[in-house]
Length: 179
Image (cartoon, rainbow, N blue to C red; front, side, top):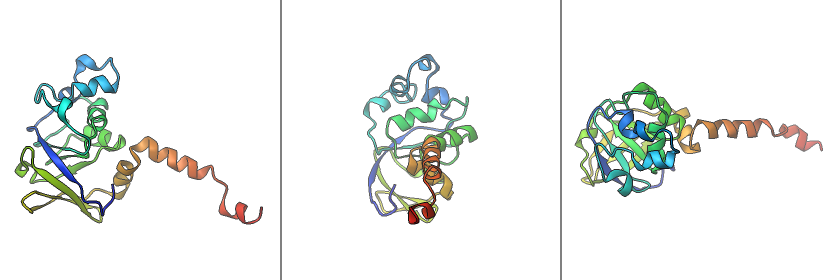
């Protein structure tokens, strides 16, 4: 996620209190993430999983991701290619699962002002993201700590750990200088 890249993202809207069962319906949990994602949000938006495009954003009301701790709820959104979820607040478990999988969550008190099908741009000043609306309004979001942005950029915690392990397995620089 380059800080200089300007990309337009289509907004998909859902309401408040969207639970993990709506994101990853229990009836499909015995299947892989492809099947689970195909049913993501179908109880609220029958068109969502079939029509959402990579790079789109999901805008929700407060308490997004409440319910169970199922990681597949964030995984389904990540699998569908969302650039971010923008909401005033999130369930703590969903928040952690999303970043662990590399899904960007933006906590934005004014998320409700974003409209269905509007196109927005995501910008960053250091660790503080902003949402630039199609009308030119700039909505501030809560800062995202750099270690969480590193997880998003790497595609999740597992990839961050793999990168760290790869660095540790390299011989020290001094070994290259004297060989």
